[in-house]
Image 1 (tube, rainbow, N blue to C red):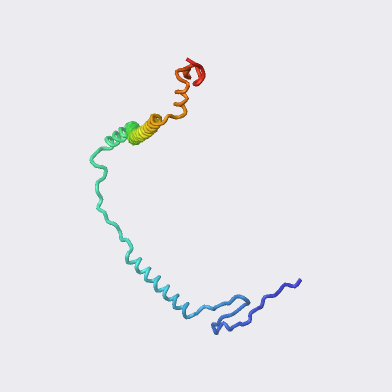
Image 2 (image 1 turned 90 degrees about the horizontal axis):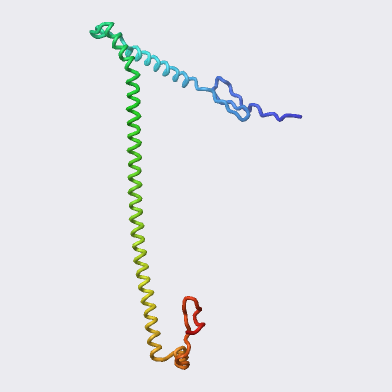
Amino acid sequence: MDCPRLETSTEVSNPETNTTRRLGAMTMIPPNESRRNQIRKMAQKEEEELQRWKESHRLTHVHITPDKLGGDATLAQVRERQYQDLRCSKVLKKMKQENLARKKRQEENDEFQHKKDEQRKKAERNEMRAQEEQQCRRQQQRQEHIRVNSAFLHNLDGRDGCRQSSPGPRDGWAEATGPGPRPVSGPGSRPGFGFE
């Protein structure tokens, strides 16, 4: 198998002329020597300035007049105080932990009480809203009841007026039969069956 060869350089320039060279798909651009020298000189100049600045701003010696340290306590008193601090440190640490725990419990209780108060207020608002809704429903039911009753009574009044002016078929049957047996409706009987 023959592998395909890439094209080699089509243009090869002389390095002294500082022109580009092409090798297949790649192009090589040589550096500009004058620009490179200029950048190198600027970098050296800036580095020298930095070194001069560091030298001029270098820390000088610190001069402190010596003082007598340790206060006016003797070594035995200092040792006694350290021993007392060491003995009391456990108790102080325990007391500090207890104070922190007490404060934390108090904050938790306050937060819990605050939440309880909020829930209580919310429950009272809900209860008041439920009572208002129930009262509104009762008022609507009362109005509906009054409307239905008045419609019923109006219908009864209309029927009574019709019976008095012209007797219906039932009234005629009752007049034709006379004082005979009447249908009885009682607790143990079916209406319309049985006689008194």
